[in-house]
Length: 147
Image 1 (cartoon, helix red, strand yellow):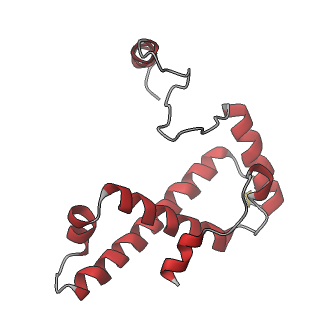
Image 2 (tube, helix red, strand yellow):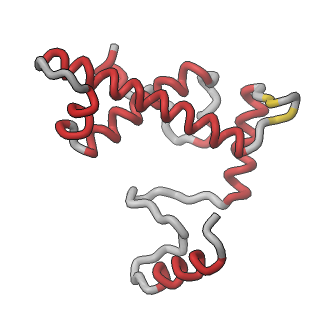
C-alpha cells in the first residue's frame, strides 16, 4: 500500500520511540491486544462460516469484510448526521453538519458513531457471532440512549 521506502521510513520512526511495542499502527487504547494478519483472516473466515456469509458462492474474504465495514461505517455516519440534524432543528439551526462538526466534541462524535455502528452490526449478524472472541457479551447500555 505504501511502497518499501515509506514502510522503511515508518519503521525507522517507530523504532526511535521508546514506548514502541512493535506494532506498525499502534493504538492509543490501553491494554488492547493485537492480532496477526493470519489470526484476523482466520477469525474473519470463521465468522463468515458461522454466519453463512458467501459472496458468489464462496466464503467471504477480508476484502469483502472491509467493504462491508466501510459501508456500515458510512451508514453509521449518516445516522450521526441525522441525530445532529435533530439537535440542530431543536435549536433552530439549519445545518446538521455544523452541529456535528463544530458543537460535538471529537470524543462524542466517535462515541455516537460507534453506538450507531454497533446497532447496525447487531441487526445484521446473529447474536452469537461475536461471542467466541469477546470476553464480554453484555449488550451495550449506551443503546438505551437511543431507544
